[in-house]
Image (tube, rainbow, N blue to C red; front, side):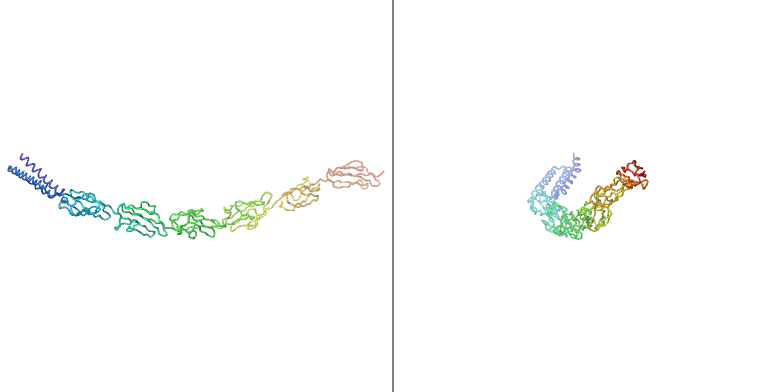
Length: 555
């Protein structure tokens, strides 16, 4: 038993003393308690060893006195308690934290303990960029400095909140107004004296553009498209305000200061027009409409979104220079009628134009237009006169000025000539077309064996040559008749005579021939194309006739 007890004391009690005292010194930081425990346990160890060595009962009495003395010393000593701030035990006159420091007055004893009921003053000292906000666990959590009455161990928390700065366009906000070349920004409320804001502060920013600039927008505010805008100071804020330059518009070297720009050749309507300062907001899209004056046409733009269309558009994103080009345009007037399309109708015919004039009825300068005269039925093209002189139906006109042209169509009539019978002869001139009012001389020319009788149709008379005025379509027929020759002879010559004698007679003519004998002769008979012995006979002229009257001497 003795040996076992000695072993326990040697291998258990001594390490227990060392561990317990170390814990009290270094963890509890209670020096007095550590000394008491060290003395008491060491005394117990010594007395036990002495007891085993000497076997004296009074050693137990001493042991009990030491134990009770140690316990009494612990409980009867002044109570010592700790103060902890943000989980850091207070061991001196201040406690350093991330957001600041806390000054402690009075400081704890050297062991970091306070005597019970000690009143400690705590002062929060926020570091740069922080504000003291409140305490937790003090006598007055809303006051700084505040106090703590050490009635027991105290767990205190100090609350700091960050303070934040604002930068606008790389300028630190230190007042209520910032000025930039393009404009200014009003800040409400301004920061405090340290140039910072308490967390959660709502700051209103109002931008004012300088002349020649417009506010474009914010970057980094609660609503980047509104002015004023706001910023909630939940951290350091870097805000950007953007101003856009305002730009002017120049059309053909004329500064646009109203919705209409006038030129000698026409005008340009600008929609929308510029503001009162004669400038446009960046990005404004405008519509330009060219309106040429009479005698001019819009040709093209330069510097727009579509230089070949009218109206056109342009976007104002810089000083904008646009040019409009008008061109002289010319009229073609034919017979005092302005040519308005690809053809024009007149009395007697029409005129086609290639190319046709534009929608304004005019031609671009130096256009070559080809005019073709097309007579109507009953008319013929006569000539061009005026700014072109020619007798060909198609002419080319260079449009280098207004053109005044006359086209002449003449009314014509058809003259139809005929012969009856056809073989009876001819008429000169033959059938043809003649201008109105022309006098045509007609001549009938009978064929051999025929004679002209008279004219029929739109002219009368029996003269082979006649005149006819062409004031309408005319139809004329020359009437011819077949003629035959009658040859009459007497045999013997002195025997008598025949009446009528030889001659030419119309076809179908009946002729009565009478033979008259001379003195001393009597009529004997007819011979040739007629027969008989009667002195008077009738023949039909249906062919050439050869007839002889035969006489004999009176017996």
